Length: 509
Ligand SMILES: [Cu+2]
Image 1: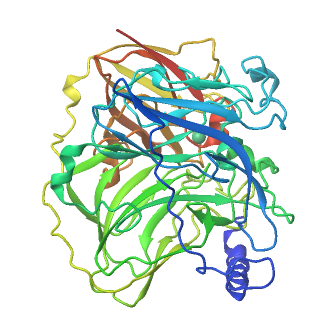
Image 2: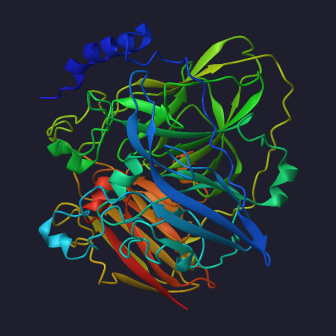
Image 3: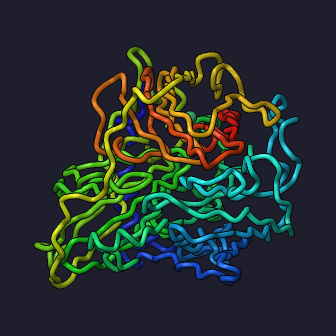
């Protein structure tokens, strides 16, 4: 029996409690939205912009009564500063691991343990969405050769050459990614193409261009994170508190003008159907990897874990009013005859239930620049360019498998030629879970879905796509002729990835 209906009154009670301001509870919409600071280069020597990131432990006051042990970068106790990389600028990033070796080595599943370095709190750095040689990730495959506590390592020097986009960075240690991200290791990474300034889109960071990292977390009574304590957490950990930029239920105070929202679903498992509380339409300007050819009018955007959306909301007529960013209710995907809640919901905030995320206290009217009719030159994908089709079966033969196999760092699953165009078909055989499919090292184009038409959020440059139960999604891959190395593909439900739903491909020059 579905437990969703029973939980609704409970949830309503919880929300009331949140608003009541009882000791130790969060009074919703009383804390301002923090904006992650922009990380300046440590140096620019020999034409190379050098950035340094240090992962360390901290304590974060999500609740008024006592802090939560967390991780963060560069002195932030949770999350990290925003990198702003410039197209054409040679760049290197050095990662320093200041985490304490206070957790057991990552993997306890016998058939996978042999594949994992036994390094407590060893970490890595993955630049999610970046088109670069695989040595721009730490380590090259960014999963297996862990940087131990006290260690430092640098990426190769890379020169970004891709469209303006909001990307992000996070650790990628096999079997421990879910835990490290949950504890706070993640940050935004903008790719700025100076040529896009001519578009005159809102671009005042944190003012009319708001970065929003949306995550859900579950807490123990002592306010420590409750991570992976339930059987159903193997299907991905769901939280019952929604954080934006590391704060539960914050408020933003934009002017009454056009506001750009840069959404990242930074959650381990939860998908969101983002909308405004009054159901108004807004413009989608871009998707994971950059701007769409033209703005698309939508009323909601479904983002799976790791998905991003670049949105333009018109608050011009809302001076003095209060609006909310919400997640609308949606039906959990399920094949006929299956119960999506069969294993229990895993959280009092069931996936697919409605909730509010962020309050907007709209200020005084400010003039808005006109919205450009054209944003980017991006012809529709041409499937006839492909010379090869590869098939990826998700969980056809066993939990967390891709093409019947769990991840093995000693196995290369696919070999690709640099410069090639290929069609990758991904089929989800799981009856009740949508898997967010992610490929490292580039951006792809979604060609079609077997279950229906593409949404605006499927268009443009993509690195993560939600594949529904029973569905096949086809995408056109283009492997940059200048880039080579060993890359990953995987499910971006972090607990799935940690349990082996991941593979490697090598791009040969
Ligand atoms: Cu998955």
